[in-house]
Length: 78
Image (cartoon, rainbow, N blue to C red; front, side, top):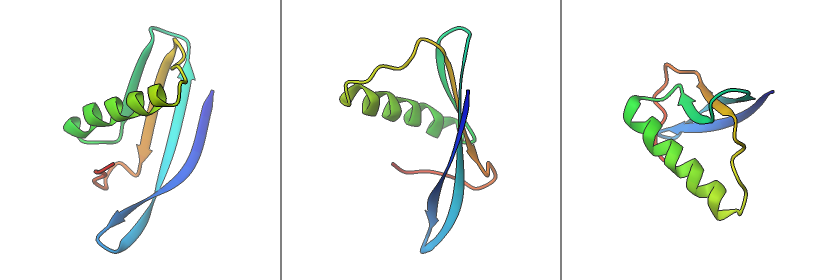
């Protein structure tokens, strides 16, 4: 299952589109974020897990992959 949504990022006062694609598939349960620098990936994973936990929802026991595009623009922050 692939879900795509549009979001935005800010670079200074300029905005740009960020396309978020989420795929939930069979496989070893994992949560991966691609399209971010290495250090930001770990931080993003933990933020998403904490946000889901605080809503009393559970991550499905499946392989979850989140892609943030365009990958050539540095994405950082909350």
